[in-house]
Image 1: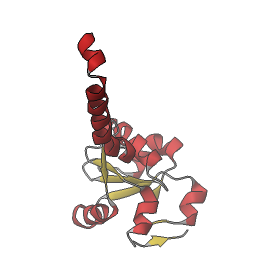
Image 2: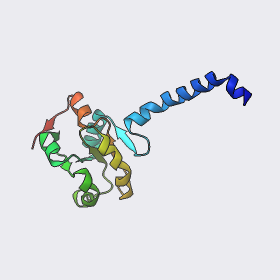
Image 3: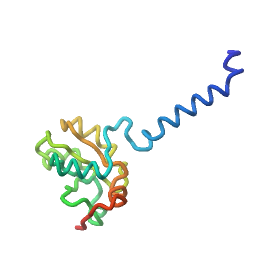
Image 4: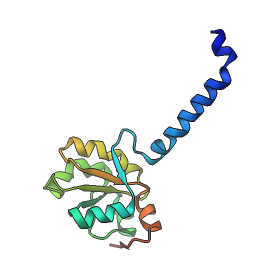
Length: 138
């Protein structure tokens, strides 16, 4: 115990260093939920592997702007309607929402439905716009 008291600064530095190493993973939503990818990687996945883009935004958000060709399955209905919308579970599935938070939360649940390659766009549609990629309005 004496060692801990005399060296509390070292323990504080070690704890702080560990927290700083974990922060990007926590902020990016990649812990626990599953994979996330940037907007440019999503485009490559769409073009090369025919990935299906599922927008989990509500209807109003989807109407204000969405990725060209994406399917709108609002987050609260997505898990029950996904198998009807994406029949081929071997295809990559990309989840997206305005900020990326809802999509990241749904990655693990989507994998439990049998979809093997599911990822969310880190930063959502905001990151998509920042990358200068096109959106369409309903």
